[in-house]
Image 1: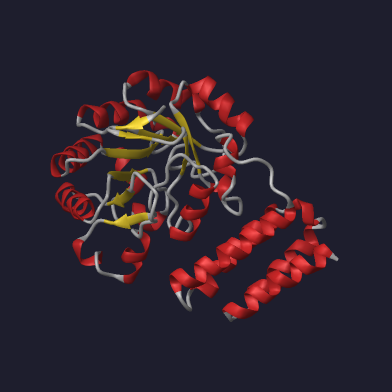
Image 2: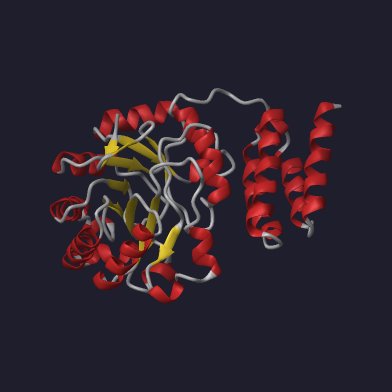
Length: 322
């Protein structure tokens, strides 16, 4: 049983927080299918963003999911501490700090993986957050800024020394983004350097790969990110909670997800759900011809109303049943 501070997780397969993707509807599905732990989408730490619609939606919680973990980003220790306090007062059980996002728009704001180049500032940020709240603070990192300047072990030791209670590691540097070999050897060195739980992240898309990664790294668990796009059941399958699903069951889940997106976002949900349906159809190889599946995506993306999106999915189900 893996725990983050006092919080025992259901299992050691986690869903990676992904901004614009792992929202309330998506996290609800992965939880139902058996993922061990979920974290909110990344939320900006500045106080003036707290009451924006975007922030409110991103930090939304799901009834029945515990612990409630919120990921924040920023580069100012005082602002991060204030944000951690607000989220705790708003009901968070765990505060996660993002030191791993490689997106340019995040790094330009001296946040995310850009901070890996300033270990002293990371020390201040983690210390400030830990001092601000009585709940566990965790971090997500990469292995360094670039292959020639890996410092993941140093960052992990600093974070643990300042009170971080768990560390998730994407096994690539900021410069590598999502390309190239995942450095599971580096994750193994990080795990050996600290005593808090370490979760390995990067190109883990099935139970066998997860088992190999755990064996290779000694990590306490795995964190699944992009492999879960269009497959919210995957983390639960990796954890051994959910079995194989038929194509009809998958299509029913797509429909449920689309309805949940409409309900959560209102009118903007029609546009938001297009990317999710595309990911689903891209992975449903049971449907056959890739070109035909791309055509289905194009058809769906032209739809501008909630009702017609659902009609489109119902029509697809009927065609398969015929």
